[in-house]
Length: 251
Ligand SMILES: [Fe+2]
Image 1 (cartoon, rainbow, N blue to C red):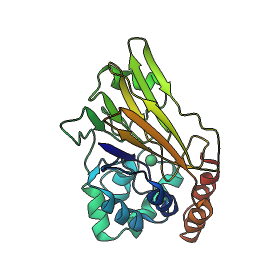
Image 2: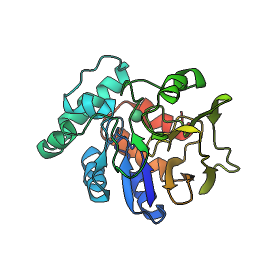
Image 3: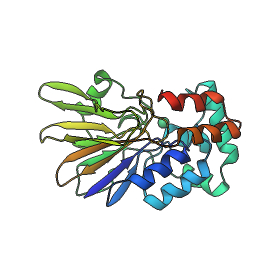
């Protein structure tokens, strides 16, 4: 089975459109949350992800923008964007966001794979470094758990020798690229496909991943998109300019 794993689109329509045109062949799509928040096109993005598949976990922005969660922990810019999103979502999309399930979700009983937004223990926790990842890898909910939230593509692995950081090293900055990661038996993984709509690892290209279960290979992707278009939409919507600026640097 070829599983397309996507996360953190954040209402960035230009990024999602570019990815939709470039996604590799896949059987299913697993979405790790933060469909909305920050970007200017929440309704269009919700419509497109609903067409893609039905496996979702909710993100902290999905909760905040739909009123399921509060704005605790949100900085002023993120909070402004969440309130703007709440005001601009259609009633149907608001209800759809409210109903998104909390992770962990195990979408397929025949596969030892799970989906979370932050971490299996806490959907709002950020797994940024090997220290953060030690607990979920020591007591894993699956051999491989896909997570988002940090907007940092890569993840962590643990075998007998401890926790390793997995960070794809790309060669370019402005063209499409792919990096493969072969998974090993006897090793547990936390894998982050990266963020489609607001990467934060210094690479402004959209990130996503495809997991080929037969080959046990994760394919990481980076893809350029119309950043200027997404920025213009943010400014035209009256959202904080900082949300447009940060897309250029991938921060
Ligand atoms: Fe996010």
